[in-house]
Figure (cartoon, rainbow, N blue to C red):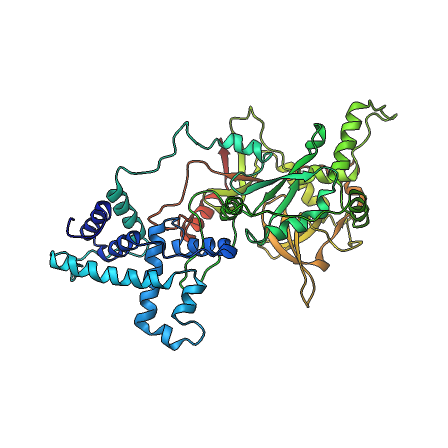
Length: 504
């Protein structure tokens, strides 16, 4: 080890790489660790540089894997003459495009060649022939992680139980019961502004984190004498990954969404997210003109109502309004704190650790909803009176396995303008699946579905609830990026199809 111009731990990694038949990869990673960082970070492109580095890491979050993947692509391009044949993507343009310092990459190539020569003089070189161990593509990343761990033992970062351990329950409280792995919040939003008016502006300033997101405004702040409230931004749990021609992805291992990492990176870069506000009177006027709901005004009204006793009508308590029934329908009825076990049926499996489920001991409500929406002798659905709005609860068609088209309760998530007609992305609240339908096929609910009676179903909560299993994760042997394989998803779907389970 003394004959190598490297740190003792890097030399140890190379020796372990020789033992585990991954010598060349360890030489490249060790040489890169001995030089200055090969990745550039221009001031005005820090976020793009961060995303590019995540792409080079290929779902590992490891600097060493970044160096290894970048060097392999650089060497392959030189070997095949890609830089010479390409007109627009020469060597320097390629380096600038992927935020790589070309001079450092050339120094790395020289050091790798020198290390190979020194090791050959010591009798250490890549084993060839039938005695060589050939690692599969999904096995090599795991072997390299074992080699790195052995080389740097015992210099590991371990999150202590008392020094920074994440309290998931406290995190859920911070984001008001939303998923802490996919939600961030912004502070200092003025309480005298209608938040929904600025939802699109907030999405635009956070567009670098994810193309789609949901924005919620803190409705509890009017209960206390504060001037500012929080804005909660929830990103989709699964986002289509950005890939390049090397079939590598910008991804993050573990449960935390990549979009959350990007948002935290914005915070670390001290990036100011500026939303230009209107005057309170003008903002309120525009919100009313656009038909937006001012959550602050509604919450203050609820507070005033709570303080003022209401006299019941002759028939007893006032019936809930149409808006209250829709709000009740959009939220599933979750298990109580005292429920140790619940009987469930999985309606939409996403992967072995994430699915949507229904209560299997309460099928009556679901059957009643289906009967009322698709009854032949009753006019329960009517054409839309206007254009659909994001967040609106409507009835959308779905084709069952026997090719029967039935209507189900659905929430509008997005609207896409197309030449052949608007395409609407809807979420079926009673089953948990998402589909794209034509705008012309959507229907609104007749007033009879909101009244008390045989067909009054709109007060029934959403029948599907989102579930995530704890203490379960994908096998790194099957997928080095830590994602569920399609084979595992297919097997899980077979296991849960048309069966009831108990959830604890």
